[in-house]
Image (tube, rainbow, N blue to C red; front, side, top):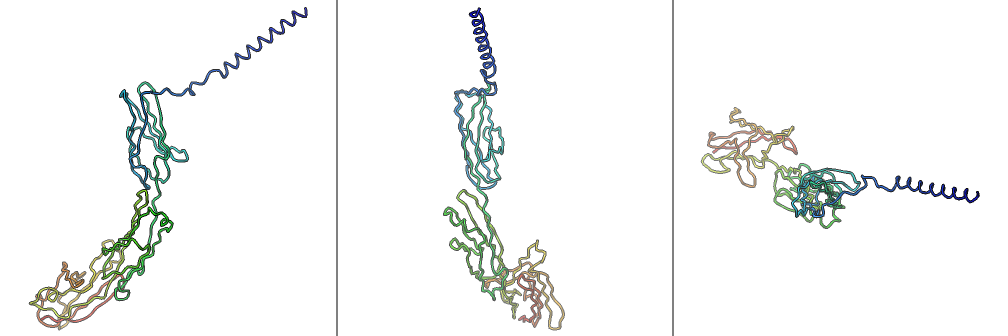
Amino acid sequence: MVKQILFFALLLFSITIVFAQNIIIQTIGKPELDSIPPQKNKDLVLDFEVLHNSGCESLITQIINRVQNPLEDSLAFFWTLFNDNQTVSLHYDDDNPDIFINEPGSYHIKLVVSDAQGFTDSIIKYNAITVDKMPLIDFTFTPENALFAEYLGVVEFTNLTDTKLLKDNSIVWYWELGDGEINSNEWSPVHLFSSWGDYHTTFHLKTKNGCKVALTKTITIEDELFFPDTLFKKAKGASSIFAITNLNTRIAKDDPNEFRTNYLFIYDAHGEKIYEQTNYDSYIKKNQVVKGKHLLRAADLQEGVYYYSFFYKGKSKMVHYKGAFWVM
């Protein structure tokens, strides 16, 4: 009797173990379908290149796929561009996508290729594109508006650009001073302008990754005005024209102050006004006569003495000149 009881106990224990094993197999013995890796097309070799893999903000470039497809299967391309934070930035489904990146940083590229049979494969290239931040540049200059007689054309520039950039030997920078001179030796130059005028001075800077930036400011230098004292009716050139020496006639259309505006009045010996012109524009610079739209010639006047009154709104100061000249 004891043997029978022991036999049935062992039999029950065996059945319990087999039942438990079946439960475990049903629970973990078969992987989920989603965890099965996709099958690959063994004939494909994935590769790609970036035409311009470095640059500055607002970088425009193109990815060229170099996938080897010997069987010429029909393929679908899916590109993902993401940054160091694994944040997906852009998706593309073109074979050779053009891309635009506005934010600085390091970018990785993932390519997924699928064929008509549903086979897929992928490749990732890390740090495939590097985008630099556009450097910020600025400068000031003294004096801002100068009379040539006071400063003799000397202008001092102060470069406000971060000097840390100078530690990078690959940085290229230079000054284009506006009078034909180039300066690549002085970070904050002092320059001598030889005459009056408007000089468009530009500071250029280029980083090792090709980030180019330039800033232009206008330096204005004015000079005292001089008027003819004698005009000759039968002469040619400067002595026959009422030309004002050092007169800057460039009036900016968008200047709310209307700098360079002038008014010329000519009177005869009896005080009668015989000529009036707004923005008279015939002048002399470096002994050269520049004939403008408005031109008063000695040949148009009778011999005798005349008086002029001239108002000029310069950037440095407003002036009113009075004087006399002879026509002979």
